[in-house]
Amino acid sequence: MQTSIGISAENREVVAHQLAKLLADEFVLYTKTLNAHWNLEGIDFHSVHNYFEDLYNQSVEIVDGVAERIRQLGHYAPATLKNFLQLTHLTEQDEDGNDSRSLIRKLLSDHESIIEFIRGNIDEFQDAHKDAGTSDFVTGLMEKHEKIAWMLRAHLK
Image (cartoon, rainbow, N blue to C red; front, side, top):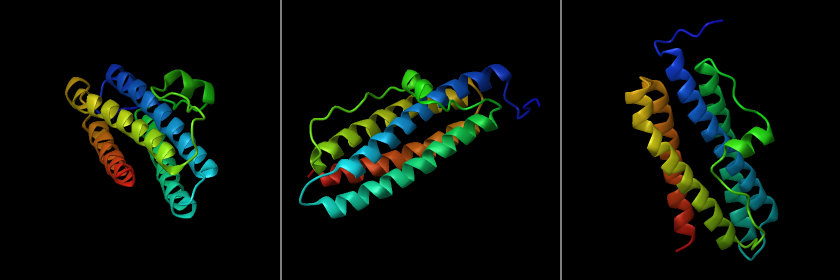
């Protein structure tokens, strides 16, 4: 069935492709957050383990939201690990520490990378591709990542 939401097919395709990259980033970050939750060690294990659990629960909601936004635009969301690894801007995590500070630094870096990617697309979605809905949607995601990044930074002080 044809998607008729006031955005040209060409613009919806460009936006959906950028959202596919964001989805890949979000899924990789979700996986890295699970890694941090599962493999954390140290004296602050209990509190940080619980914090990482909160983070991965937030991540899974974000992943689902991005995939659903792609579907709202009339496109299919990438849904394989192979696709995610081809599309992501993030890198695999090396095994250089399972203490809270090391893991938090890695997660903070990824959240900041996603913030920059989103910020670079907000105006383009609205202005160049006439998609105010996706622009608004990713603005909300950026604000979530900014809050998480602030909290991660606070752990490192």
